Amino acid sequence: MTAPFLRKLVLYALLAAFVVVAVYPVLWMFTCALKTRREAATDKWGPPETLNWANFRRVLFESQFPRYILNSVIVTVSAVVLTLVAAACAGFAFARMRFRGATILFYVFLAGMMIPVHIVLIPLLKIFGVLGLHDTHAALVMSYVAFSLPVSIFILRGFFESVPRELEEAARIDGCSAAGVFWFVCLPLARPALAVVLIFNFVTLWNEFIFSLTLLQTPDLFTIPLGMYEFSSQHTIDVPLTCAALSIAVLPMLAVYAFAQKHIIRGLTSGALKG
Amino acid sequence: MSRTFRSKTVWLFLAPALASYLAFVVVPIVQSFAVSLFDWPTHAVSPTRFVGLENYARLIQDGVFWKALSHNVVLLVLSLVIQLPIAIFLAALLSGRVFGRGFFRTVYFTPMVLPTVVIALLWRQMYLPAESQGLLVQLLEWLRLPSPADGFLGDARLALLSVIVTISWRYVGFHMVLFMAGIEGIPEELYEAARIDGANAWQSFRHVTLPLLAPVIRISAVLSIVGSLKYFDLVYVMTKGGPPEHVTELTTTYMYQIGIDQQTIGYGSTVAVAGFLISMLVVVGVMGLRWHARAAVREVRE
Image (cartoon, rainbow over all chains, first blue to last red; front, side):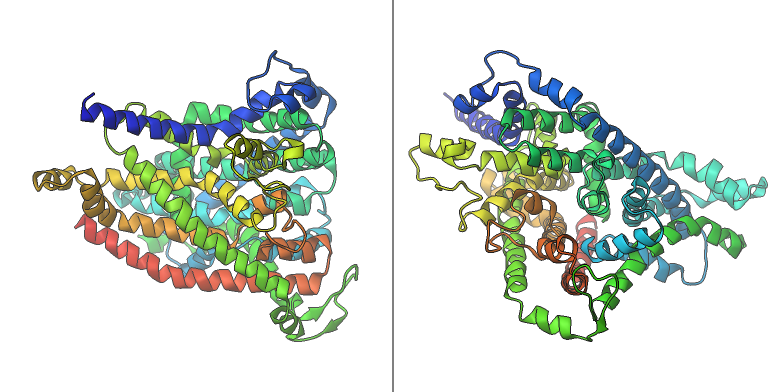
Protein backbone atom coordinates (compact mmCIF):
# COMPACT_ATOMS: atom_id res chain seq x y z
CA MET A 1 0.00 0.00 0.00
CA THR A 2 1.33 3.38 -0.96
CA ALA A 3 1.35 6.40 1.31
CA PRO A 4 -1.10 8.56 -0.73
CA PHE A 5 -3.54 5.66 -0.80
CA LEU A 6 -3.31 5.26 2.96
CA ARG A 7 -3.85 8.98 3.39
CA LYS A 8 -6.96 8.89 1.22
CA LEU A 9 -8.22 5.95 3.26
CA VAL A 10 -7.83 7.84 6.54
CA LEU A 11 -9.41 10.95 5.02
CA TYR A 12 -12.52 9.13 3.81
CA ALA A 13 -12.78 7.09 7.01
CA LEU A 14 -12.83 10.35 9.00
CA LEU A 15 -15.35 11.97 6.68
CA ALA A 16 -17.56 8.89 6.84
CA ALA A 17 -17.38 8.84 10.64
CA PHE A 18 -18.65 12.41 10.74
CA VAL A 19 -21.41 11.53 8.29
CA VAL A 20 -22.56 8.87 10.76
CA VAL A 21 -22.52 11.37 13.61
CA ALA A 22 -24.44 13.96 11.62
CA VAL A 23 -26.97 11.60 10.08
CA TYR A 24 -27.49 8.71 12.48
CA PRO A 25 -29.82 10.53 14.90
CA VAL A 26 -32.07 11.55 12.01
CA LEU A 27 -31.88 8.12 10.42
CA TRP A 28 -32.68 6.50 13.77
CA MET A 29 -35.74 8.74 14.02
CA PHE A 30 -37.05 7.52 10.64
CA THR A 31 -36.36 3.83 11.34
CA CYS A 32 -37.82 4.01 14.84
CA ALA A 33 -40.97 5.57 13.41
CA LEU A 34 -41.44 2.46 11.26
CA LYS A 35 -41.23 0.06 14.20
CA THR A 36 -43.87 -1.24 16.55
CA ARG A 37 -43.50 -0.31 20.20
CA ARG A 38 -42.28 -3.78 21.12
CA GLU A 39 -39.73 -3.85 18.34
CA ALA A 40 -38.49 -0.36 19.21
CA ALA A 41 -37.95 -1.44 22.80
CA THR A 42 -36.03 -4.64 22.00
CA ASP A 43 -34.05 -3.63 18.93
CA LYS A 44 -33.12 0.01 19.21
CA TRP A 45 -30.32 0.27 16.70
CA GLY A 46 -31.18 -1.79 13.68
CA PRO A 47 -33.53 -1.20 10.77
CA PRO A 48 -37.19 -2.18 11.21
CA GLU A 49 -38.13 -5.79 10.43
CA THR A 50 -41.12 -4.79 8.40
CA LEU A 51 -42.22 -1.34 7.31
CA ASN A 52 -44.94 -0.49 9.75
CA TRP A 53 -46.68 2.69 8.60
CA ALA A 54 -49.28 2.66 11.38
CA ASN A 55 -47.47 5.35 13.36
CA PHE A 56 -47.38 7.70 10.39
CA ARG A 57 -51.06 7.03 9.73
CA ARG A 58 -51.91 7.81 13.33
CA VAL A 59 -50.02 11.09 13.26
CA LEU A 60 -51.47 12.16 9.92
CA PHE A 61 -55.07 11.06 10.40
CA GLU A 62 -55.70 10.89 14.14
CA SER A 63 -53.81 13.90 15.46
CA GLN A 64 -53.75 17.66 14.98
CA PHE A 65 -50.63 17.43 12.84
CA PRO A 66 -52.14 18.34 9.46
CA ARG A 67 -53.56 21.41 11.17
CA TYR A 68 -50.10 22.32 12.53
CA ILE A 69 -48.60 22.02 9.05
CA LEU A 70 -51.29 24.28 7.59
CA ASN A 71 -50.75 26.80 10.41
CA SER A 72 -47.01 26.82 9.80
CA VAL A 73 -47.56 27.47 6.10
CA ILE A 74 -50.02 30.32 6.79
CA VAL A 75 -47.86 32.02 9.42
CA THR A 76 -44.50 31.55 7.71
CA VAL A 77 -45.61 32.60 4.24
CA SER A 78 -47.43 35.71 5.50
CA ALA A 79 -44.51 36.76 7.66
CA VAL A 80 -41.92 36.14 4.94
CA VAL A 81 -43.88 38.06 2.30
CA LEU A 82 -44.66 41.01 4.57
CA THR A 83 -41.04 41.19 5.71
CA LEU A 84 -39.80 41.12 2.14
CA VAL A 85 -42.07 44.01 1.09
CA ALA A 86 -41.35 46.19 4.13
CA ALA A 87 -37.60 45.43 4.10
CA ALA A 88 -37.22 46.06 0.36
CA CYS A 89 -38.87 49.47 0.69
CA ALA A 90 -36.84 50.43 3.75
CA GLY A 91 -33.60 49.01 2.30
CA PHE A 92 -34.16 51.09 -0.84
CA ALA A 93 -34.80 54.22 1.22
CA PHE A 94 -31.63 53.70 3.25
CA ALA A 95 -29.53 52.99 0.17
CA ARG A 96 -30.83 55.65 -2.20
CA MET A 97 -32.48 58.49 -0.34
CA ARG A 98 -30.96 61.15 1.81
CA PHE A 99 -32.90 62.32 4.82
CA ARG A 100 -32.19 63.68 8.26
CA GLY A 101 -31.48 60.98 10.85
CA ALA A 102 -30.87 58.31 8.21
CA THR A 103 -27.69 56.99 9.82
CA ILE A 104 -29.08 56.91 13.34
CA LEU A 105 -32.27 55.25 12.17
CA PHE A 106 -30.28 52.66 10.27
CA TYR A 107 -28.25 51.84 13.38
CA VAL A 108 -31.44 51.51 15.40
CA PHE A 109 -32.58 48.85 12.94
CA LEU A 110 -29.14 47.26 12.91
CA ALA A 111 -29.15 46.88 16.70
CA GLY A 112 -32.23 44.70 16.28
CA MET A 113 -30.05 41.86 15.01
CA MET A 114 -28.38 41.51 18.40
CA ILE A 115 -31.44 41.80 20.63
CA PRO A 116 -32.35 38.70 22.64
CA VAL A 117 -36.08 38.15 22.11
CA HIS A 118 -36.70 37.64 25.83
CA ILE A 119 -36.66 41.35 26.47
CA VAL A 120 -39.87 41.84 24.46
CA LEU A 121 -41.92 38.78 25.46
CA ILE A 122 -43.77 40.11 28.50
CA PRO A 123 -44.65 43.49 26.94
CA LEU A 124 -45.69 41.82 23.67
CA LEU A 125 -48.21 39.68 25.53
CA LYS A 126 -49.70 42.84 27.01
CA ILE A 127 -49.60 44.78 23.73
CA PHE A 128 -51.37 42.05 21.79
CA GLY A 129 -53.90 41.79 24.61
CA VAL A 130 -54.68 45.50 24.26
CA LEU A 131 -54.90 45.20 20.47
CA GLY A 132 -57.36 42.35 20.86
CA LEU A 133 -54.92 40.01 19.14
CA HIS A 134 -54.23 37.79 22.11
CA ASP A 135 -53.61 34.19 20.97
CA THR A 136 -53.89 34.82 17.21
CA HIS A 137 -51.80 34.12 14.12
CA ALA A 138 -51.78 37.86 13.44
CA ALA A 139 -49.85 38.48 16.66
CA LEU A 140 -47.31 35.83 15.73
CA VAL A 141 -46.89 37.17 12.19
CA MET A 142 -46.40 40.75 13.43
CA SER A 143 -43.70 39.65 15.88
CA TYR A 144 -41.98 37.62 13.19
CA VAL A 145 -41.96 40.53 10.76
CA ALA A 146 -40.61 42.96 13.34
CA PHE A 147 -37.76 40.61 14.30
CA SER A 148 -36.89 39.61 10.71
CA LEU A 149 -36.67 43.19 9.49
CA PRO A 150 -33.18 44.14 10.76
CA VAL A 151 -31.23 41.41 8.92
CA SER A 152 -33.44 41.73 5.85
CA ILE A 153 -33.05 45.50 5.61
CA PHE A 154 -29.32 45.19 6.12
CA ILE A 155 -28.87 42.67 3.30
CA LEU A 156 -31.13 44.55 0.89
CA ARG A 157 -29.64 47.95 1.60
CA GLY A 158 -26.21 46.52 0.85
CA PHE A 159 -27.49 45.21 -2.45
CA PHE A 160 -29.34 48.36 -3.52
CA GLU A 161 -26.19 50.37 -2.86
CA SER A 162 -24.35 48.23 -5.38
CA VAL A 163 -26.87 48.95 -8.17
CA PRO A 164 -25.12 51.40 -10.56
CA ARG A 165 -26.46 54.92 -10.17
CA GLU A 166 -26.38 55.47 -13.93
CA LEU A 167 -29.27 53.04 -14.35
CA GLU A 168 -31.29 55.01 -11.87
CA GLU A 169 -30.43 58.34 -13.47
CA ALA A 170 -31.40 57.01 -16.88
CA ALA A 171 -34.77 55.95 -15.53
CA ARG A 172 -35.26 59.33 -13.87
CA ILE A 173 -34.53 61.14 -17.12
CA ASP A 174 -37.11 58.92 -18.78
CA GLY A 175 -39.58 60.31 -16.26
CA CYS A 176 -39.61 57.58 -13.64
CA SER A 177 -40.72 58.49 -10.13
CA ALA A 178 -38.98 57.24 -7.00
CA ALA A 179 -41.44 54.40 -6.82
CA GLY A 180 -40.84 53.69 -10.51
CA VAL A 181 -37.08 53.48 -10.06
CA PHE A 182 -37.61 51.16 -7.13
CA TRP A 183 -40.13 48.94 -8.86
CA PHE A 184 -38.83 48.82 -12.44
CA VAL A 185 -35.07 49.21 -11.98
CA CYS A 186 -33.89 48.15 -8.55
CA LEU A 187 -36.25 45.33 -7.60
CA PRO A 188 -35.71 43.20 -10.70
CA LEU A 189 -31.94 43.57 -10.29
CA ALA A 190 -32.16 42.65 -6.61
CA ARG A 191 -33.54 39.16 -7.23
CA PRO A 192 -30.48 37.33 -5.82
CA ALA A 193 -30.54 39.43 -2.63
CA LEU A 194 -34.30 38.99 -2.31
CA ALA A 195 -33.78 35.23 -2.59
CA VAL A 196 -31.22 35.24 0.23
CA VAL A 197 -33.58 37.22 2.46
CA LEU A 198 -36.51 35.00 1.57
CA ILE A 199 -34.68 31.75 2.27
CA PHE A 200 -33.08 32.98 5.47
CA ASN A 201 -36.40 34.17 6.89
CA PHE A 202 -38.32 31.16 5.69
CA VAL A 203 -36.04 28.59 7.32
CA THR A 204 -35.70 30.62 10.51
CA LEU A 205 -39.42 31.26 10.91
CA TRP A 206 -40.54 27.77 9.84
CA ASN A 207 -38.48 26.42 12.74
CA GLU A 208 -39.24 29.24 15.20
CA PHE A 209 -40.30 28.19 18.67
CA ILE A 210 -40.18 30.80 21.42
CA PHE A 211 -42.62 33.35 19.99
CA SER A 212 -45.18 30.69 19.17
CA LEU A 213 -44.72 29.13 22.62
CA THR A 214 -45.36 32.49 24.24
CA LEU A 215 -48.08 33.95 22.03
CA LEU A 216 -50.25 30.95 21.15
CA GLN A 217 -52.51 29.09 23.56
CA THR A 218 -55.16 27.42 21.41
CA PRO A 219 -53.91 24.06 20.06
CA ASP A 220 -55.80 24.71 16.81
CA LEU A 221 -53.42 27.58 16.09
CA PHE A 222 -50.13 25.80 16.86
CA THR A 223 -47.31 25.79 14.33
CA ILE A 224 -45.26 22.63 13.68
CA PRO A 225 -42.52 23.23 16.31
CA LEU A 226 -45.02 24.12 19.03
CA GLY A 227 -47.38 21.32 17.99
CA MET A 228 -44.47 18.90 18.04
CA TYR A 229 -43.57 20.02 21.55
CA GLU A 230 -47.16 19.54 22.68
CA PHE A 231 -47.49 16.19 20.91
CA SER A 232 -44.36 14.78 22.53
CA SER A 233 -45.49 15.73 26.02
CA GLN A 234 -48.73 13.81 25.44
CA HIS A 235 -47.04 10.71 24.04
CA THR A 236 -43.80 10.46 26.04
CA ILE A 237 -44.03 6.69 26.39
CA ASP A 238 -44.86 5.88 22.79
CA VAL A 239 -41.42 6.42 21.28
CA PRO A 240 -42.16 5.18 17.73
CA LEU A 241 -45.24 7.39 17.53
CA THR A 242 -43.23 10.41 18.67
CA CYS A 243 -40.58 9.53 16.10
CA ALA A 244 -43.21 9.39 13.37
CA ALA A 245 -44.40 12.85 14.36
CA LEU A 246 -40.81 14.12 14.43
CA SER A 247 -40.23 12.65 10.97
CA ILE A 248 -43.32 14.33 9.58
CA ALA A 249 -42.24 17.58 11.21
CA VAL A 250 -38.86 17.59 9.45
CA LEU A 251 -39.81 16.07 6.11
CA PRO A 252 -41.08 19.21 4.34
CA MET A 253 -37.92 21.14 5.20
CA LEU A 254 -35.62 18.21 4.39
CA ALA A 255 -37.29 17.76 1.00
CA VAL A 256 -36.77 21.44 0.18
CA TYR A 257 -33.20 21.19 1.44
CA ALA A 258 -32.47 18.16 -0.75
CA PHE A 259 -33.44 20.10 -3.88
CA ALA A 260 -32.07 23.52 -3.01
CA GLN A 261 -29.20 22.80 -0.61
CA LYS A 262 -26.81 25.21 -2.31
CA HIS A 263 -29.24 28.10 -2.04
CA ILE A 264 -30.25 27.24 1.50
CA ILE A 265 -26.68 26.94 2.74
CA ARG A 266 -25.83 30.24 1.07
CA GLY A 267 -28.99 31.90 2.37
CA LEU A 268 -28.46 30.77 5.95
CA THR A 269 -24.75 31.55 6.15
CA SER A 270 -24.82 34.91 4.41
CA GLY A 271 -27.92 35.87 6.38
CA ALA A 272 -26.12 35.08 9.63
CA LEU A 273 -22.85 36.64 8.47
CA LYS A 274 -24.52 39.94 7.77
CA GLY A 275 -26.18 39.67 11.15
CA MET B 1 -29.80 63.43 -7.50
CA SER B 2 -30.59 61.53 -4.34
CA ARG B 3 -31.83 64.80 -2.91
CA THR B 4 -34.65 64.98 -5.41
CA PHE B 5 -36.77 62.56 -3.40
CA ARG B 6 -39.31 64.44 -1.38
CA SER B 7 -39.46 63.67 2.32
CA LYS B 8 -43.02 62.45 1.88
CA THR B 9 -41.76 59.73 -0.44
CA VAL B 10 -38.98 58.81 1.98
CA TRP B 11 -41.35 58.25 4.84
CA LEU B 12 -43.73 56.33 2.62
CA PHE B 13 -40.92 53.88 1.90
CA LEU B 14 -39.89 53.66 5.53
CA ALA B 15 -43.32 53.60 7.13
CA PRO B 16 -44.17 49.85 7.08
CA ALA B 17 -40.82 48.73 8.46
CA LEU B 18 -40.58 51.56 10.95
CA ALA B 19 -44.09 51.11 12.32
CA SER B 20 -43.67 47.39 12.84
CA TYR B 21 -40.22 47.73 14.35
CA LEU B 22 -41.24 50.54 16.71
CA ALA B 23 -44.41 48.83 17.87
CA PHE B 24 -43.08 45.33 18.43
CA VAL B 25 -39.39 45.80 19.20
CA VAL B 26 -38.56 49.32 20.44
CA VAL B 27 -41.67 50.00 22.53
CA PRO B 28 -41.59 46.57 24.25
CA ILE B 29 -37.94 47.07 25.20
CA VAL B 30 -38.71 50.43 26.78
CA GLN B 31 -41.69 48.87 28.56
CA SER B 32 -39.55 46.06 29.94
CA PHE B 33 -37.18 48.60 31.44
CA ALA B 34 -40.10 50.51 32.95
CA VAL B 35 -41.89 47.46 34.32
CA SER B 36 -38.69 46.18 35.93
CA LEU B 37 -38.94 49.13 38.32
CA PHE B 38 -42.33 48.05 39.64
CA ASP B 39 -43.63 45.42 41.94
CA TRP B 40 -46.01 43.42 39.78
CA PRO B 41 -46.90 40.21 41.55
CA THR B 42 -48.28 37.07 39.98
CA HIS B 43 -51.79 37.41 38.55
CA ALA B 44 -52.11 41.13 39.34
CA VAL B 45 -53.71 43.04 36.47
CA SER B 46 -51.40 46.03 36.76
CA PRO B 47 -48.26 46.95 38.69
CA THR B 48 -49.01 47.46 42.38
CA ARG B 49 -46.29 49.89 43.36
CA PHE B 50 -43.14 51.62 42.19
CA VAL B 51 -40.13 50.08 43.89
CA GLY B 52 -37.24 51.70 42.02
CA LEU B 53 -34.22 49.45 41.87
CA GLU B 54 -35.51 47.02 44.50
CA ASN B 55 -35.97 44.27 41.92
CA TYR B 56 -32.36 44.72 40.87
CA ALA B 57 -31.19 44.45 44.47
CA ARG B 58 -33.11 41.20 44.65
CA LEU B 59 -31.51 40.04 41.40
CA ILE B 60 -27.99 40.65 42.71
CA GLN B 61 -28.77 38.40 45.67
CA ASP B 62 -30.52 35.79 43.56
CA GLY B 63 -28.21 32.78 43.54
CA VAL B 64 -30.18 31.09 40.76
CA PHE B 65 -29.61 34.02 38.42
CA TRP B 66 -25.86 33.93 38.97
CA LYS B 67 -25.86 30.19 38.53
CA ALA B 68 -27.76 30.60 35.26
CA LEU B 69 -25.33 33.26 34.11
CA SER B 70 -22.39 31.01 34.93
CA HIS B 71 -23.99 28.33 32.74
CA ASN B 72 -24.19 30.84 29.91
CA VAL B 73 -20.47 31.43 30.34
CA VAL B 74 -19.78 27.68 30.33
CA LEU B 75 -21.90 27.35 27.19
CA LEU B 76 -20.04 30.24 25.59
CA VAL B 77 -16.58 28.84 26.34
CA LEU B 78 -17.35 25.22 25.50
CA SER B 79 -19.12 26.21 22.27
CA LEU B 80 -15.96 27.95 21.14
CA VAL B 81 -13.70 25.12 22.30
CA ILE B 82 -15.79 22.29 20.83
CA GLN B 83 -17.38 23.76 17.71
CA LEU B 84 -14.67 25.86 16.14
CA PRO B 85 -11.81 23.30 16.15
CA ILE B 86 -14.06 20.54 14.78
CA ALA B 87 -15.43 22.91 12.16
CA ILE B 88 -11.93 24.02 11.10
CA PHE B 89 -10.79 20.39 11.02
CA LEU B 90 -13.68 19.37 8.76
CA ALA B 91 -13.21 22.38 6.51
CA ALA B 92 -9.52 21.53 6.19
CA LEU B 93 -10.35 17.90 5.37
CA LEU B 94 -12.70 19.07 2.63
CA SER B 95 -10.38 21.76 1.28
CA GLY B 96 -8.33 19.54 -1.03
CA ARG B 97 -9.57 17.59 -4.00
CA VAL B 98 -12.12 15.42 -2.26
CA PHE B 99 -14.53 13.23 -4.15
CA GLY B 100 -18.08 14.03 -3.01
CA ARG B 101 -17.11 17.36 -1.42
CA GLY B 102 -20.54 18.87 -2.02
CA PHE B 103 -22.23 15.81 -0.57
CA PHE B 104 -20.26 15.97 2.68
CA ARG B 105 -20.88 19.70 2.98
CA THR B 106 -24.61 19.20 2.52
CA VAL B 107 -24.76 16.35 5.02
CA TYR B 108 -22.76 18.14 7.72
CA PHE B 109 -24.94 21.22 7.34
CA THR B 110 -28.23 19.31 7.63
CA PRO B 111 -28.74 19.79 11.41
CA MET B 112 -28.95 23.54 10.74
CA VAL B 113 -32.20 23.21 8.79
CA LEU B 114 -33.96 21.01 11.37
CA PRO B 115 -36.23 22.76 13.87
CA THR B 116 -34.56 23.05 17.27
CA VAL B 117 -37.61 21.46 18.88
CA VAL B 118 -37.12 18.32 16.80
CA ILE B 119 -33.41 18.20 17.61
CA ALA B 120 -34.12 18.64 21.30
CA LEU B 121 -36.76 15.88 21.41
CA LEU B 122 -34.60 13.54 19.36
CA TRP B 123 -31.55 13.96 21.56
CA ARG B 124 -33.68 13.71 24.68
CA GLN B 125 -34.63 10.23 23.48
CA MET B 126 -31.01 9.33 22.88
CA TYR B 127 -29.94 10.57 26.31
CA LEU B 128 -32.53 8.45 28.21
CA PRO B 129 -31.36 6.11 31.01
CA ALA B 130 -30.83 2.37 30.62
CA GLU B 131 -34.27 1.31 31.85
CA SER B 132 -35.86 3.37 29.08
CA GLN B 133 -33.30 1.94 26.68
CA GLY B 134 -31.55 5.21 25.97
CA LEU B 135 -29.49 4.88 22.84
CA LEU B 136 -26.25 6.39 24.09
CA VAL B 137 -26.33 4.56 27.42
CA GLN B 138 -26.66 1.31 25.48
CA LEU B 139 -23.72 2.31 23.33
CA LEU B 140 -21.57 2.93 26.40
CA GLU B 141 -22.60 -0.39 27.94
CA TRP B 142 -21.76 -2.17 24.71
CA LEU B 143 -18.31 -0.53 24.81
CA ARG B 144 -18.07 -1.68 28.48
CA LEU B 145 -17.73 1.93 29.61
CA PRO B 146 -19.40 3.36 32.71
CA SER B 147 -22.70 5.10 31.95
CA PRO B 148 -24.91 7.45 33.98
CA ALA B 149 -27.64 5.52 35.83
CA ASP B 150 -30.27 8.24 35.39
CA GLY B 151 -29.41 8.96 31.78
CA PHE B 152 -27.34 11.89 30.58
CA LEU B 153 -29.90 14.56 31.29
CA GLY B 154 -30.85 13.06 34.67
CA ASP B 155 -27.29 13.33 35.93
CA ALA B 156 -26.59 16.69 37.54
CA ARG B 157 -22.92 16.61 36.52
CA LEU B 158 -23.53 15.61 32.92
CA ALA B 159 -26.75 17.45 32.05
CA LEU B 160 -25.25 20.79 31.05
CA LEU B 161 -22.43 19.16 29.12
CA SER B 162 -24.91 16.90 27.29
CA VAL B 163 -27.01 19.88 26.26
CA ILE B 164 -23.88 21.63 25.00
CA VAL B 165 -22.92 18.55 22.96
CA THR B 166 -26.33 18.68 21.26
CA ILE B 167 -25.99 22.40 20.58
CA SER B 168 -22.55 21.78 19.09
CA TRP B 169 -23.93 18.97 16.95
CA ARG B 170 -26.30 21.49 15.44
CA TYR B 171 -23.84 24.31 14.77
CA VAL B 172 -20.60 22.61 13.71
CA GLY B 173 -21.75 22.30 10.09
CA PHE B 174 -22.64 25.96 9.98
CA HIS B 175 -19.19 27.08 11.12
CA MET B 176 -17.62 24.54 8.78
CA VAL B 177 -19.31 26.18 5.78
CA LEU B 178 -17.93 29.57 6.84
CA PHE B 179 -14.42 28.11 7.16
CA MET B 180 -14.67 26.31 3.81
CA ALA B 181 -15.47 29.64 2.17
CA GLY B 182 -12.55 31.21 4.03
CA ILE B 183 -10.12 28.52 2.91
CA GLU B 184 -11.30 28.84 -0.69
CA GLY B 185 -10.27 32.49 -0.55
CA ILE B 186 -6.66 31.65 0.28
CA PRO B 187 -4.51 31.97 -2.87
CA GLU B 188 -3.19 28.65 -4.17
CA GLU B 189 0.30 30.15 -4.68
CA LEU B 190 0.82 30.36 -0.93
CA TYR B 191 0.42 26.59 -0.61
CA GLU B 192 2.64 26.19 -3.65
CA ALA B 193 5.33 28.27 -1.99
CA ALA B 194 4.99 26.34 1.26
CA ARG B 195 5.39 23.06 -0.64
CA ILE B 196 8.53 24.32 -2.37
CA ASP B 197 9.90 25.27 1.05
CA GLY B 198 9.39 21.65 2.04
CA ALA B 199 6.38 22.11 4.31
CA ASN B 200 4.29 19.01 5.03
CA ALA B 201 0.50 19.04 5.22
CA TRP B 202 0.41 19.97 8.90
CA GLN B 203 2.98 22.73 8.50
CA SER B 204 1.18 24.34 5.59
CA PHE B 205 -2.06 24.13 7.57
CA ARG B 206 -0.40 25.66 10.62
CA HIS B 207 1.50 28.41 8.82
CA VAL B 208 -0.70 29.21 5.82
CA THR B 209 -4.30 28.15 6.45
CA LEU B 210 -4.68 29.09 10.13
CA PRO B 211 -3.20 32.61 10.01
CA LEU B 212 -5.10 33.49 6.84
CA LEU B 213 -8.29 32.06 8.29
CA ALA B 214 -8.01 34.31 11.36
CA PRO B 215 -10.62 36.85 10.19
CA VAL B 216 -13.18 34.11 9.56
CA ILE B 217 -12.35 32.49 12.90
CA ARG B 218 -13.06 35.83 14.59
CA ILE B 219 -16.39 36.17 12.81
CA SER B 220 -17.33 32.62 13.80
CA ALA B 221 -16.33 33.31 17.38
CA VAL B 222 -18.42 36.48 17.48
CA LEU B 223 -21.50 34.66 16.16
CA SER B 224 -20.96 31.85 18.63
CA ILE B 225 -20.46 34.21 21.60
CA VAL B 226 -23.52 36.31 20.81
CA GLY B 227 -25.58 33.16 20.26
CA SER B 228 -24.49 31.59 23.56
CA LEU B 229 -25.77 34.53 25.54
CA LYS B 230 -29.28 34.40 24.10
CA TYR B 231 -29.57 30.65 23.76
CA PHE B 232 -32.93 29.21 24.73
CA ASP B 233 -34.81 26.67 22.56
CA LEU B 234 -32.83 23.46 22.96
CA VAL B 235 -32.34 23.85 26.69
CA TYR B 236 -35.96 24.72 27.34
CA VAL B 237 -37.26 21.70 25.44
CA MET B 238 -34.63 19.24 26.67
CA THR B 239 -34.48 20.06 30.38
CA LYS B 240 -36.49 23.22 31.15
CA GLY B 241 -33.42 24.30 33.11
CA GLY B 242 -33.49 21.19 35.31
CA PRO B 243 -33.35 18.38 36.23
CA PRO B 244 -34.20 19.99 39.59
CA GLU B 245 -31.82 22.47 41.11
CA HIS B 246 -31.32 24.52 37.94
CA VAL B 247 -28.31 22.52 36.73
CA THR B 248 -28.91 23.56 33.10
CA GLU B 249 -30.63 26.89 33.82
CA LEU B 250 -29.65 29.72 31.49
CA THR B 251 -30.56 33.38 31.99
CA THR B 252 -33.17 33.02 29.25
CA THR B 253 -34.83 29.88 30.63
CA TYR B 254 -34.86 31.45 34.10
CA MET B 255 -36.49 34.58 32.73
CA TYR B 256 -39.08 32.49 30.91
CA GLN B 257 -39.90 30.49 34.01
CA ILE B 258 -40.42 33.59 36.17
CA GLY B 259 -41.87 36.08 33.72
CA ILE B 260 -44.02 33.88 31.47
CA ASP B 261 -44.71 30.54 33.17
CA GLN B 262 -45.16 31.99 36.67
CA GLN B 263 -46.36 35.39 35.43
CA THR B 264 -44.26 37.31 37.96
CA ILE B 265 -44.08 40.26 35.64
CA GLY B 266 -42.04 42.82 37.58
CA TYR B 267 -39.18 40.56 38.59
CA GLY B 268 -39.39 38.61 35.31
CA SER B 269 -38.81 41.86 33.44
CA THR B 270 -35.85 42.59 35.69
CA VAL B 271 -34.25 39.26 34.76
CA ALA B 272 -34.99 39.98 31.08
CA VAL B 273 -33.46 43.44 31.28
CA ALA B 274 -30.36 42.07 33.01
CA GLY B 275 -29.96 39.42 30.31
CA PHE B 276 -30.45 42.07 27.65
CA LEU B 277 -27.88 44.44 29.17
CA ILE B 278 -25.30 41.69 29.57
CA SER B 279 -25.71 40.59 25.93
CA MET B 280 -25.53 44.15 24.69
CA LEU B 281 -22.41 44.81 26.77
CA VAL B 282 -20.72 41.76 25.30
CA VAL B 283 -21.89 42.67 21.78
CA VAL B 284 -20.36 46.13 22.11
CA GLY B 285 -17.14 44.63 23.48
CA VAL B 286 -16.99 42.04 20.76
CA MET B 287 -17.80 44.61 18.05
CA GLY B 288 -14.34 46.07 18.59
CA LEU B 289 -12.98 42.61 17.79
CA ARG B 290 -15.21 42.46 14.72
CA TRP B 291 -14.02 45.79 13.34
CA HIS B 292 -10.54 44.54 13.93
CA ALA B 293 -11.52 41.48 11.88
CA ARG B 294 -12.86 43.65 9.05
CA ALA B 295 -9.58 45.54 8.98
CA ALA B 296 -7.73 42.22 8.88
CA VAL B 297 -9.87 41.07 5.93
CA ARG B 298 -8.98 44.22 4.07
CA GLU B 299 -5.30 43.69 4.84
CA VAL B 300 -5.45 40.14 3.48
CA ARG B 301 -7.14 41.35 0.28
CA GLU B 302 -4.49 44.02 -0.28
